[in-house]
Amino acid sequence: MHILRLNLAQLRCFESLSFVPSAGVNLLLGANGSGKTSVLESLFLLSHGRSFRPGGNQALIRRGQAACTVYAELDAAGRTYRLGLERSALGWRARIDTQTVPRLSDLLAHCAAICIEPGSHGVLTGPAEIRRRFLDWGVFHVEHTFLETWQSYQRSLQQRNVLLRVGGDNTQFDAWEHAMDSSARRLNEWRRAYLERLRPRLQEHLARWLPELGVPALRYQRGWSAEHSFIDVLAAHRARDREQGHTRQGPHRADWSLGFEQAPERHQLSRGQTKLAALACLLSQFDVFRESRGTTPLLLLDDLAAELDAAHLDQVMGYLQGNGAQIWITGTEFPQRWQAGIQVFHVEQGALRA
Image 1 (cartoon, rainbow, N blue to C red):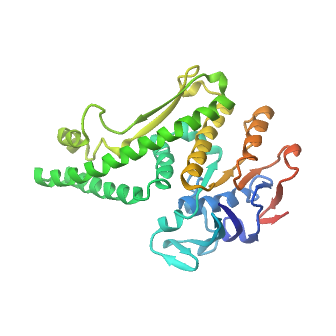
Image 2: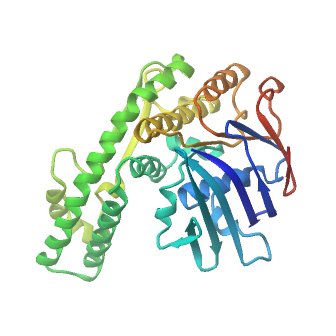
Image 3: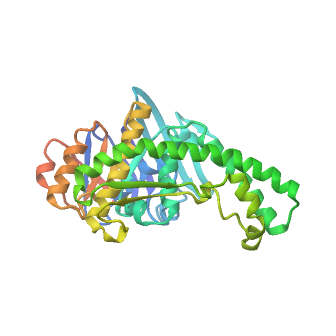
């Protein structure tokens, strides 16, 4: 898939912006604060329904304005979609081909973007929530009933947590726990299967860019004891969960980790190695998406050159230019040798020129 046209209105520093990108590599150059990252952020919004910046959703709307909008014409496997997303004090409003859709997820299913940005190291070093989000985004685009199942599990989880706090009899607990168990088993199967699909691709990327770290180890923790069924775990932990006031085990506590033979602890990696490892994870997700859907997601690379030496940057760029995706790269500067033959845009305080 690729963007045919992108329009922004009242988004951060952009009062209005409309431009036609290249179907290949688009390089956005500009000083810090010029707005180049906001262009990538707008595409991420169409794919994830949130900003990749910490606290970003609260700062999307340009100061003094009531709402901001992102509009994109998207080619997906030869079909053109017109996607619109508005953010206001009332929340999100999404449109597909001028028709307002009832759920934000309806729009998100049409646009897929994988983003490597300064916070992407969190997929290795951050809290489990970041890794679950990474995992579930991939499963969402592979398993069509994933979102419905996840929402069903969340509803049951919330009801059980209410019973833990206000009190409930065994019959009530049994009903909600059986509903949780049914959803949890499917979520666990999908997540495990997705990581297994990711594994060989991840090993390929890591062997290419980080051979000095040795054999990688990808581990999955489903969120409850491996020795017992989820329904038994819930029943056995009711008393303790009552003391805590919430459910302490389940797929909402799942996690996965990446370790290396020569660097078993994450803090043993340099900043450049951490970035390359995170890049390998995200590009593996790109590979699995392409294999599953027969099209490529957008690739958003914010400040790609930062923390990469010249040799590794050349390796990464050589791989990216041959993968057939529409690629968006930002930077304050970028090696001249890679600017030949790609579309370069200059961003200056809310304006963009080729």
